[in-house]
Image 1 (tube, helix red, strand yellow):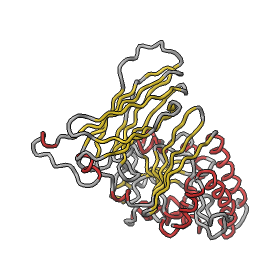
Image 2 (tube, helix red, strand yellow):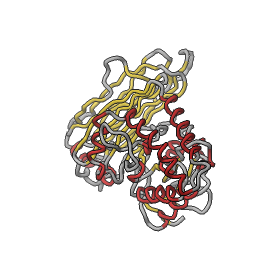
Image 3 (tube, one colour):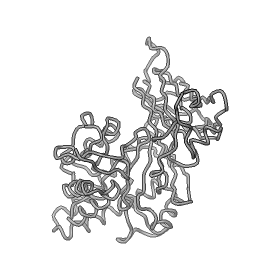
Image 4 (tube, helix red, strand yellow):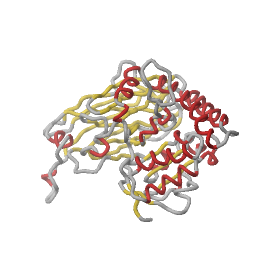
Length: 418
C-alpha cells in the first residue's frame, strides 16, 4: 500500500514512525502504532545539531501532541484522537490508536505531530483497504517515517483556519481551529451528509451564475455576487460556530494572507464564506474569505517555494492530475475537482493548483483570473498576492464566481523560469 510522509524543511530533531495493518475486515478493529524516536545527531559525524524552536524543544524532551485523522475508519466510542506525548531521553515514545473499519474500499489515516501552533511539525499518511471478509493472504504492516522539524515560519505566522476532517459512513466531522494573531479558537462541526451539502452548494453557485448570464458585464458581477453572498453567509453559519464567526469579524483587518490548513478537505468552498457583523445579515460591504488572498495548504504535501510557469496547458488549459509536471502551476476544472483532483495533483508534484469552485466543467474556468494570476506570478508576486489580484481582475471583468476559486500551494511561493 502506498504511504506518504512530508514535513517542513529543517534539521530533524526526532522522527515520527507509524504502522497500520494494510488489510482490515469491515466491522473489525485496526490498531495504529505511532512512535516518536530521537534523532541521534551526535552519532553521525558532521551532522548538524538539532534546530532551535519547537523541534529543538522536542529534542530536549518537550511535549508534543500526536493527532490521528481517519477516513473510512472511525474511533471507538470514548477513544481519544489526540495524545500528549513527551519524547524520552533514551527510548522511543509510543502511542496506540484503535479504530473500527466501517467503509469498504480504500481507507487512510493521517498522523499529525503538533507543537504550540496549528501547523504540524511532521505528518504521515498511511493507506489501508477495508474488505468484506478476512479471506485474504495479506500479512504484515504498512510502515511510514517522517522527520520532525520546525514548522515553516512563513506559514506559521499567518492567520489560519485549520481543518482536520474525519470521514466515515458518509458523515464528516471537522475538527477546526481559527487562529488570528494571539487569539485562537478550536471547535468541531458535524456534517451528517457532506456530499449532499456540497451538491447543494454547487447548485446554488450555478443558479447565481445564471442570474447574471443575460446581463451586461457592468451589472453582471454585482448580480452574481449578491447570490454568492447569500450562499457564503449561509455556509459561514453552517461551517463555523458563533465564536469563530465573531473572531473573523473582530479581526477582519488582520486576515490578509489567510491560510486554510487541512488534512485533505478539498470539496467545501471556504473562499466563499462571508465575514459579517455578528447577528446581522450580509451586506455588499462584507468580504468573502477569498478576497483576503486565501490559499490552501494540504498537510501531507510540501509545496515548493518556487514554481514553474509555462506557456502550455499547465498555466492555461489545465492538465490531468495524473500527468502534471513537478512544481508547475496547474489549472483544474470543477469536473476534476469533484474527484479530488487538487489533492491528487499536489501529491503528484504540482507546485500550485488553481481549482474552479463553480460548476460546468472546464468552461467554468475564468480566463481573466488565470491570465492575471499567471501574469502576477511572472511579475514576481507571491501566490497569495497573485490570487487576490486575479480575483479583483476577474470581478472587474464581470466574470462569474471568480471569488470561488481555490488556490493550493505555498502562499509565499514565487515563479521561476520554465
